[in-house]
Length: 439
Image (cartoon, rainbow, N blue to C red; front, side, top):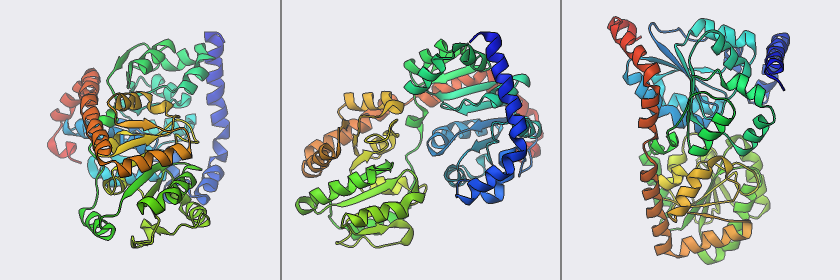
């Protein structure tokens, strides 16, 4: 595809989006009925604002879901310390709830407009951001082109490029270049990610490390934690977190295989808590007794599985154990973030499909704090070994904490890279009357 054809294709994409706009209402209503959209805030997805724009400089952050939102929270706080206002957009109900809990008044939250030119234009016309910071791998053509047309600097932060995405963009190099040339800066998680963005046409690229390492440990309610610890007594525990379809059943099979020898409690925290009914039914079929967090069920001695079917309580679940299997890695692909369990003192187990977190796993594995398993049987052996070998478990935990400390520094590097874009806004914000800045 030539450069001219690439631009024609992007123009056609925008035109198609405009033609589809009349059907957006029905599409969003359908998704709301399925529980995938916030019914009361559907208009935000069409670019209509539900909050006032504050006076003064404004930076737009976009984070697709929970993981990306957690990653940019420290960066949002750094921007706010400079008296610059922040609007944060996310695409899921769970990430909106997380933003409300973790960020509060530090940012105005809106749902991200659909990647349709009328919706994006409406959003930008109202909010008029001075800069757009997009987390990780969110590449939306209409949004990138509209930001470029308005000469609003757009920067990818904590940027990553998965194997699959790199291969897909690599088949359309002219299209990739036509899009990525709109980026003022790419701040990549790793050298591999940085090189991939350069290959695809990004002009200015730097490497910072992973912002997820520089986040605070996930919070928890100390009273709730103390109550659960009392209920557990000295009972052994292990957790399967951020699980996807099939991995909850695997965790149940592991529990059943080890129950007679260890008498352990298995903690399962699915990536999508709305699947809780389905997961519980599957575990009950395996002959397991399930306690659910949302029901407030007690962790009685005969409970096999504690199902963590809530949002924003990973800090609680991980503090209840020292062994954690991280999901989307055994049957699904891509992996999930292993850094939270490592920083909270867990020995980490994972399947081998961790492409999206390859560098983090490599660094943890080199220090001896993470181990890969091939299948359910190997997972059972790994869990049993760690539950019954205190020295090995403690060594992995200490190695993980050390590895996380070594990886820190991404926030400082990211802020330094952003200085040419943020410093002028800081000066502008501090020249405004104080009342305007605090609105």
